[in-house]
Amino acid sequence: MADTYVLLQYGADAFNARFRDLEGRAAFTVSPASHNPNLIVKLSREAVWSQHHPGTMGPDAAYFYFGPSVASYASVYGAGTPTPSPGYIMYGNNRHSIPMGYMRRQNREGSLSRYFTAQSGKEYKWKITPHRMELAEGRTILAVWELSAPTDEHDARLIIKHAGLAIVTEIMTTLTINRMSQALGWS
Image (cartoon, rainbow, N blue to C red; front, side, top):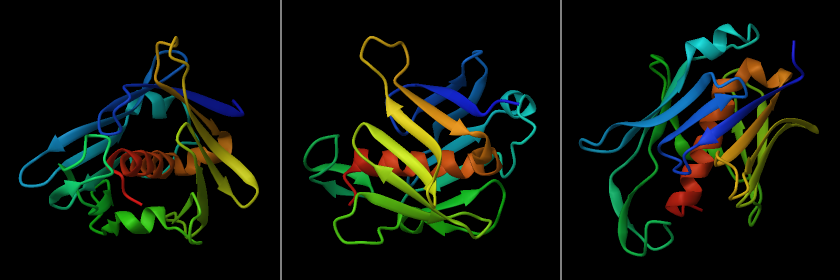
């Protein structure tokens, strides 16, 4: 059993990326599922990866249902470009929806950290900078995402500690929504 799991991210777009392990196995895929009438993005955990990691738990997919597009002046897509507004997230075929804002709460004014409560009821914190994000439970780091050097063939690297396997889809979901919010200029 490994102490850490490394996933390489291919694709810089937060709405369309693939994550593979060091052996080349597909681990997660983020891709648009629909644009009619609003954007829906699907995060899928790949079965081939889960089968190699018996501690993997939780849902095997998350769906990001965005609200209507509005003009944004902070988006990476350019000033005035219509961009999706926050909506909600659903895990797998669960009927409960979670507001996107709840999955990236700010506890203090001006803080770059964002908090979420997992389905287990535990609270986690993402410490966010433009090039790096760290996920912690209390003082324990569970995952680190970092942009890669321009010379690397992958766009970013995610390192997940073994304790994070139990909530790996929630880690990927909240990493993805934090990356999407950076791209869309959400505060």
